[in-house]
Every structure is written in structure tokens, then in C-alpha cells.
Image 1 (cartoon, helix red, strand yellow):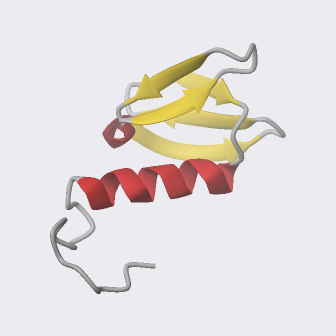
Image 2 (image 1 turned 60 degrees about the vertical axis):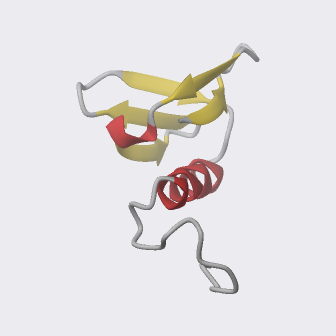
Length: 73
């Protein structure tokens, strides 16, 4: 799960696995796999970084969580 901020300032958590695409229109718009769109304050770059970190935490990017000393960036 990632924590994001709606345009009205309220935060919420989103299961990043359901993100299909992230675009700037100019506000950052996240399209989910079910077609729903969510507009957030975070930049596209910030959302991508949050998603990548989430995938690392659940080991989707191929890096075991307990490997130390491995440069993951």
C-alpha cells in the first residue's frame, strides 16, 4: 500500500498493484485497472518512487527483503 494525498489535502492509502498508469494532466492522475481515475498532489515521479518502494517491500522487483549491502537503486 502507498499513501497519497488528494487535491483537497486528505491522505489515503492505495494498493499499488491496481495502478495501470500514472500521468500528468497537469495534475497527477492515476488510472486503476478497473478504469477509475484518482487525482493526487504528488508528482508522477513521486508516485513512481512510492510504487517501486512498495514493490521492493513485497519482493516483486526480484530483490529479497532481507538482502543487506545490495544497491537496489
